[in-house]
Amino acid sequence: MIESPYVVATNVEYVKPIPPIPPKPVIKRISSYCSCVTFVKSVVGYDRPVGWARSWPKNSEPEIGGVVVQNIGKYGHVAVIEGITGNTLYLVEANYKKCRLTRRTMQITDPSIMGFWSS
Image 1 (cartoon, rainbow, N blue to C red):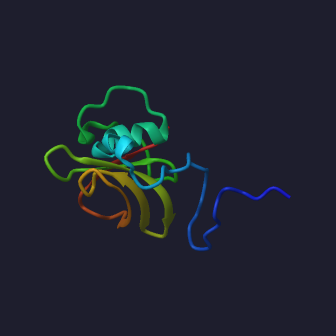
Image 2 (image 1 turned 90 degrees about the vertical axis):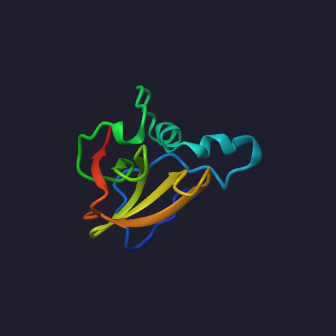
Image 3 (image 1 turned 120 degrees about the vertical axis):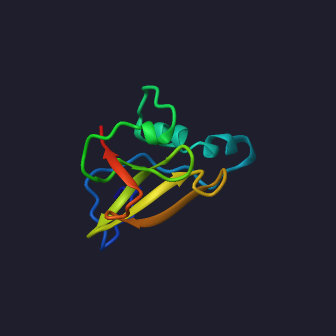
């Protein structure tokens, strides 16, 4: 029997799998965690120029494997949505904390959210 690489969480709706998230940064990979845009583009496979995070296109409702675009800081911020439970988004992101890969939750109603993107 082949074991699944995905962990099943009972309170999270997983609609589609997303690529595995890299482990905690190591010295040779730290530069990729210093840009939320570069990290999110690599995870979701987006290959068009974006510029600042707040310039990321917005075209959808929140969904697993999609992107949340936030109007925070000077340039904005983007993160990948790993899960959704009710009004709670489970995010994985780079550079929310300087040059680090982190996970956190936020509410769909958070006023910093500018929109969502999905392929």
